[in-house]
Image (cartoon, rainbow, N blue to C red; front, side, top):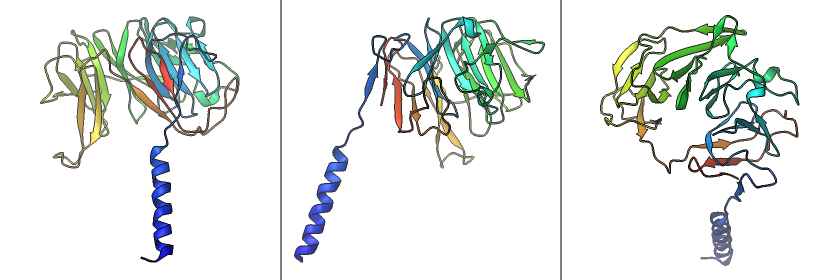
Length: 286
C-alpha cells in the first residue's frame, strides 16, 4: 500500500476514535442549584413549538424553562392545584395542564403572548366549565386534528379549541368505572385507553368505541407508546405497553428553538436532552 494511502487510513482511524469517545456533557439540576428546580419530583416534561420546556411538578406547580432560567406557575396563574400531573400543547398551540383538582388551558395560544408576559390559565372557556376532578399522569392525550382527550376520574372527555372557542366532543362510552391508567393517540387517529382494572379500550377519532385491544396483559398499564412496524397486518404500527414502575423514566428531546421569547432570554439553540428519573429524583439536562 502506498505511504499516502496508509497515512490517510491512519488519519481516518484516529478521527473516528475521537468522535466515538465524545460524550455529551450533562448538567444536573436539583432544588439546590443556582437554577433550582421547584421540586425534585418531576411528573411530566414536554417541549412546546416555541422551544420552551415545560415541567410539571408534584406540589410545586408548573415550570417553563428557556435554557437559562426557570419560571414557575401556580394557582395565582390559574392552575387549580400545585400538584400537576400532565401538560400538553394542542395543534392550535394552546397549553393544557391536568392536576389533582382538574383541567385548565391557556387563555390564548402561546404565540399570542408578548415576550416577558406570563401565561394565564383558565378552567372555564365561554360557558363550558372544564372538569374539576383529578387527572392522573398519562391521562391526557393530544390528537393531530386538535382534539384533546382527558381521562378524568371515571370518565373520558374530549375538547378542541377552534378560533378561541371551545368545542366539546361526544364520546360513546364516557363512563369508565375503574378509571384510566394511561392513554395514547395512535398515528391513525384512534385512541387507546388503558383501564385501572386492566385491559385497553379502542376509540375512533370521532369518539366511537371500537372495542378492546387484544393481546394486552390484564394488569394495569402505566404508559403506552407506538413504534413503527412494517410487519403489522395493516401496514400501521404496533403498540408497546409499560406497567407502572418506580424506576420508569419519561424523556424528551430538545432541538433548536424556532423562536426566541422568554422573560430572561431565548430558549437554548443547542441540542439538549432532559430526563426525569423517578418521581423523587431530580431532572438532568444536557
